[in-house]
Length: 189
Image (cartoon, rainbow, N blue to C red; front, side, top):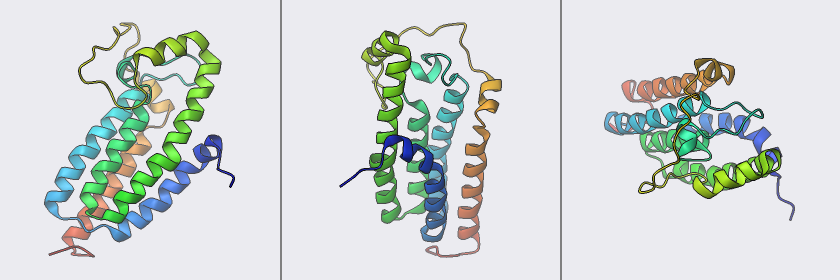
């Protein structure tokens, strides 16, 4: 059996995400409490993605500042937070399983492929970074390396990476879920 490469998955993860979003909206059974809790968690994920996008200069330098001090993949960690929040808001086990399947089947292979590229591109610097920084989940009881004071958040990078699209998607999904509750479309009374 031939598996899809991390590069191919990287190209397909966004279109696949849109297809899952359509299924998500159709299956979601939100309530106001679930929506509130879910949006809070999703907003934390959105914030993580925003902060990470303002610190990364793709293919130019190794990102080790800001959220990259705590996780080698804060963009994906933020996506995980977004997914978890929206799964909570949807109150649907199938969507939870689908989100888990996407994490394991799509995002982890993409992360491995990207890290192989970074290892080739940045060599010893990336190997040293890997020794001190976890792949995805921050170590809560371990102090991260000191941050470089010259490498603060950049709105220009945030805009260049078009991370505002994640905010637009967040807002649209939140509005669709709120509309489902308000108009009692496929929700529990």
